[in-house]
Length: 374
Image (cartoon, rainbow, N blue to C red; front, side, top):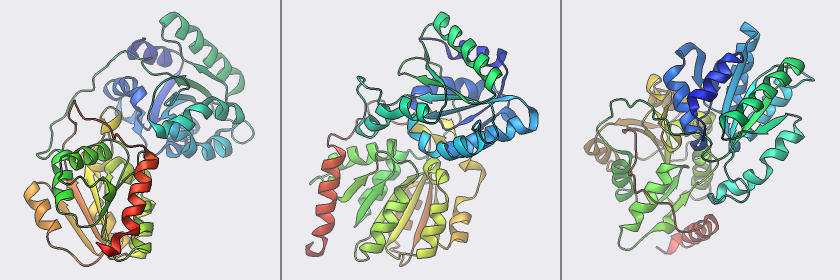
């Protein structure tokens, strides 16, 4: 392993002056170090990877300096357009460093949603014409690669990528902030126990906590939940489509603040369609909790006001279990948005779903198909 401090300082010495991106579990120690050590004006946690590339390009245009964009390899899809139509050598030829967490690396055990992306990560970079190196986990090896990176950038004035394997960086803990009163798991327990329909949950800790809470029920009702284990930011659009197709079923979407911000245009689409059987709940802890706890901008914006402006009929905010339970038991008729303020963190022994995504899909679709006979 190499220390995040070593890699960070080498980047600074080589000319990097701005950091942006979306946090990743394989990069959590590096991202934590950036968050703790970089001045606020030189570090921006972006809402999605494409926006991060645009922010990086803006920094270069304003200063002539070299920016760095970090992301999980699943975020390459969001970044392709600005990488090819903005930063590419045949367009504006903008130098930037990409640091990409390699989830699903071939031969390394990982969750199902990362397998395909892991197989094609390097070939995607090759197809885009972006030179890259798989970062070595020794200072000597990494130092040589860093020199090659900046020699290449100096010659080409174009993007260069580092692909980061699991356990490349040594642990670094982000400074903790004061927590809210309610845990996310407590909030999900209140929601699931007061939900008569189906639930579409977003990727990360939320789906894992919902799964474990269902395990405690008698009888167990996993078939009522669609666990969106990948596709961050798209759970609300999945829930919208289901609600429109099945108006007789109450649909609850469990979203996270980072996911809601990543594709916030979904709120406008939902508010325009106004399905009366959809309840959109954002569990807001102001952090990318599943990938190291780096902060989001959610605490600094008014999500309920945004939902209201987008056309949601009923809009609420809850900070306690009592408030949340009272809102859910109102049984509002009409499209509903609830922001639930929760604290960061999860149980150390939190497990993962035992069923595969294919098994989850089959059980969920069968549940919907037979809903009329319930």
